[in-house]
Length: 206
Image (cartoon, rainbow, N blue to C red; front, side, top):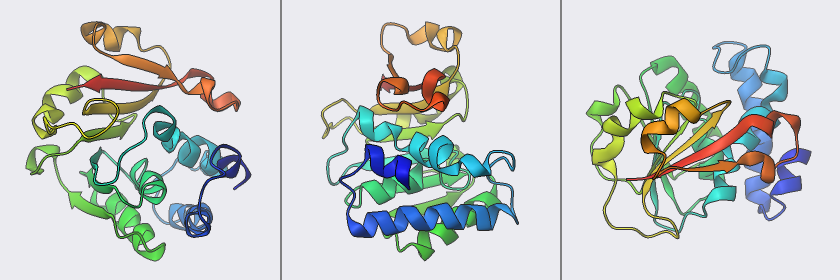
């Protein structure tokens, strides 16, 4: 927990307990179902949980905000974000049922009440959201047409509603089509661990 608390000392006792539980539950599940690379599970706190919380450094969600986590897998970034934002609702969507069951089980065991789950294709999702978030799911050009219809036109946060993606590496080709709209925020400006040297938040208002 030292890395999480270093950057998020404001966490309540309940939130600290929930984050601590994540650090135990993901390895427990990963031994049965490979939701995180087996060679990377030892780096769970920094490479996965802290990475998910990178979105908190970019934008502070207001209470009542509605967020869809597209391609959540085992619940990342949705579950760490739901812990941080108990007054924000998160809808976690994935096409792989066994990974989503891991996310559901972990959310139940740590007592999260602000998350819902949907197994299936994003085209089957109904409703409106303030933001769609994702973590290394697909190319921006493929994602935008899929999620545009979900974005509520009524803004309630400091930045307009849209798409927030956690990505790494050289993104110049991917963002070229949206270069006049997309904002790229370097996570290395918030987190000093080596893992974050090439990690970014992509924000595209929709």
